[in-house]
Image 1 (cartoon, rainbow, N blue to C red):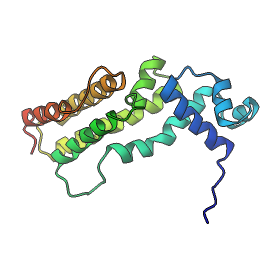
Image 2 (image 1 turned 90 degrees about the vertical axis):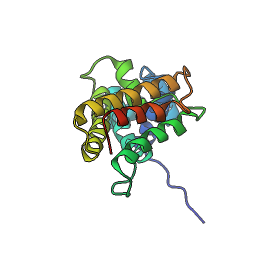
Image 3 (image 1 turned 180 degrees about the vertical axis):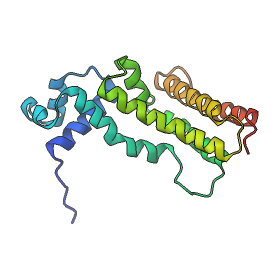
Length: 189
């Protein structure tokens, strides 16, 4: 017999923020967040300084799942080239899900416009970590300009995520050849 662990009000708020902001955007109201979480506004403000802090905490909370879903496991035996391609295979496979709306971290940065916003800072750091992953793999793959390749790869990642997220394009058969062209041009092993 399994007993279901009841989520705390904090966990319910983080979950509601993640779900609603991904589906409806960051301008979701406090009342809607509290209603979805089954938590009073008073409780929310006892747990979080502001809605902005709740959004930032929610993004931070999702970061581990994003990394687990997007990146290959460390020391998995794949070559640096295969590890980079893995990330794009994951984007392609996730993009076919009916509820896929692109990269939540890119969406937050675009919607907020304010780089100093707590949620924007969290999103920026997570995207910087992904760029650093690309740079590290490019360096391990013997690329002469790993910074440039990392910037090109994050551009493809964000562009592919955004276009698939708004339903403007189907990524199947598009992303892997694009990334392969970049890796070949960079002379990546």
